[in-house]
Length: 512
Image (cartoon, rainbow, N blue to C red; front, side, top):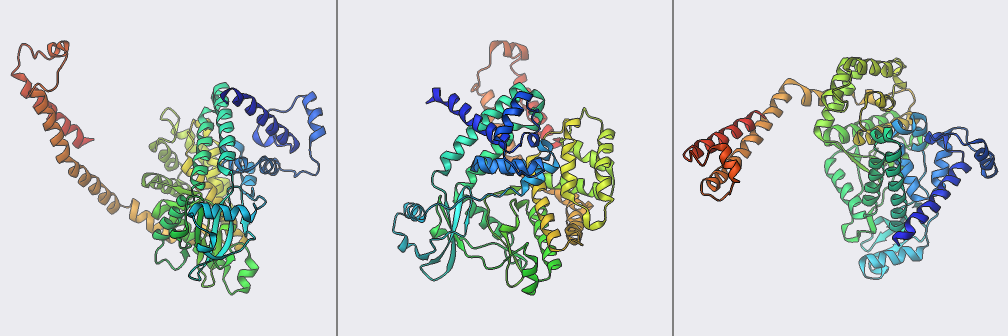
């Protein structure tokens, strides 16, 4: 099998190349132009009536290559530093839709997951799917107690198909880093690993159920945002059952107005929900396209599909807040200092030059009318200049930037005359005061000190045991080591040496 791996990879690679040529998608990937002879051959297989934009052509090519490449396109949509802002924007619209698989396979998957006939699990289940994507499809059903539910079932054979694609992409990433060292800064292997990790999580529907439950806990009691309840008794690795969502897709503006909803109020709720997820909780829905967000009859936003979630730890949230504050206040020295302090940019780079680059990026965007200002575009353009300053990729911020871009697009669809971030400004200012003000700094400093004090007894106990072991001969030292300390000539100095070691470690710990 090992001997066949390389030929199989080469065959698959040839198919990929042919598809990219057919859709004239090499330009979008920044690959070299074809030679004249290759260009003439390519003209014979190139499709007609293709879209004008390279990113649109690439999206079509990836969709034809199959589920693994659809997911790759979704990852690349967060990497404007790799493919450029325009291509990344086009890949954001890449549709993850496939033909549904047969209901006989749905039945088999459900019965295999729970070990009993489908009639003992659901009172009824629709044979026609309501959504079919590369990993799973969804059917409406009725639980035995009469509740209306939605059932998500993994596509048969999806694990093996993705494993093949991820293996090929990992191989290509290794080759790219080996033969083109300059692109190592962009971490192509890390991009593939991000894809692999995302897919692994998506292919265990218990993980999606857990993500849904965590987000629900974070928004417990919130009247503006909620998620479906999980039916844990009808959830397994390959089957997920949730309550059925009733509502209007968030991008269907006229239907929302006809139903009595205020588009501006919906944008404000979306902005607040997004802000709370990112800054308050550090855990956010990272696939909030219109198909995954509905407006319930009571006006609340209801999210579905929790296969892709993002996490941002508190230190990174602080960095992000300081960075955005610097941009919005046009304090580019602060923007540069934040990047250097966080270690995003190597200390060998010029802080002033980075501040100048930040100004060049921000001024054209911040000079636009308020409703046209895009923080997502600001971050995307910042990532584009990273090569000049050897700034390493920050995957958690790239995923956030993609989510911001999608949210801004939804907001403009609902009301093109407002900026969603200005609607969330009171929350932003309140969070900044609570987390970056003088009292917050004192509070967090006290917490850190208390945490260290809690660790002190364990540290002293460990040092005491080490000292006792040394004094009792439990630790045998090499004769050269003993000679270096003069232990063979002055054994009575050992107690003082141990005591000095303990004091030194405690002092170093206290001042660390």
